[in-house]
Image (cartoon, rainbow, N blue to C red; front, top):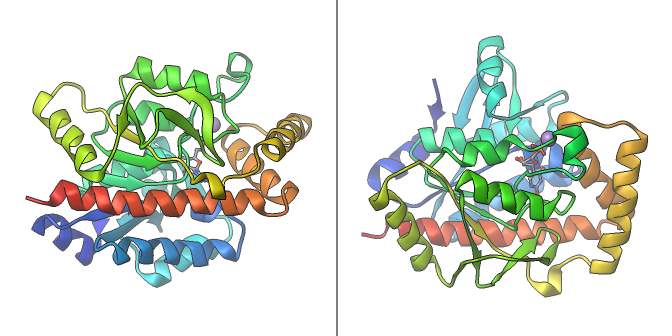
Length: 301
Ligand code: PSU
Ligand code: MN
């Protein structure tokens, strides 16, 4: 059912480091044509750290873990490619659809293929004005029941960050800052909210993963929140101003559901002269590198 590439399958079987990469950021989170270059660059970053990249997507109804170059190109350039959260997977499979996978669908497929470490930009979470919209990303619920380590720059700052942190607590998802006691703010190094735990190096992260397995209990994820370096973050004042406008535009244009996140990300890119894109990419690159090092520490005997 899940097509795992030869390279990824062999690496998993031999206990070599593998890093899962999601595809929604490629298909729906970044502007074209830059998205294709970034997708390939992220795979190269994983390789440069000595790990195997496993980009995940659904093509013609088949979930793939590990894409070849032509398949990455399809995800980045195909018109009408869907955005698939985990609830969409059976529908896409049965109808032969193609789609990019969000954090939730990627985490599910990665875990099925035996890949334990996953890098992304920012997780989905609780949207602002949740009391009216009930918009909470499916990422959170899935991470509460999937044993995977997700390296991210926190949750997207377009969300209600404290509400999201609260949901993660309620759902029993372990969260630690990497080299910081502050929860990162995606485009910003600091969301303004603290985290309870700080981990200092990949070996320490791998130690937490081993403790998760040894303790048993619910198969929840570990979130490693890795801040974008301060020098590469988006100017906080610009961020605050443009984000306000973006949220108003989203309301004015009555954008809802799956379209909300891509709309807001795109609005920020267009209204910061691309500066939000650079901060987003800096965060993702840092996460991919760290994920590869964690995967290496995890597989080291
Ligand atoms: N991080 C990024 N860009 C993105 C996303 C994350 O830097 O486009 C995607 C992820 O795939 C995440 C999804 O799972 O946004 C959340 O969408 P929603 O809020 O509709 O659940
Ligand atoms: Mn949503």
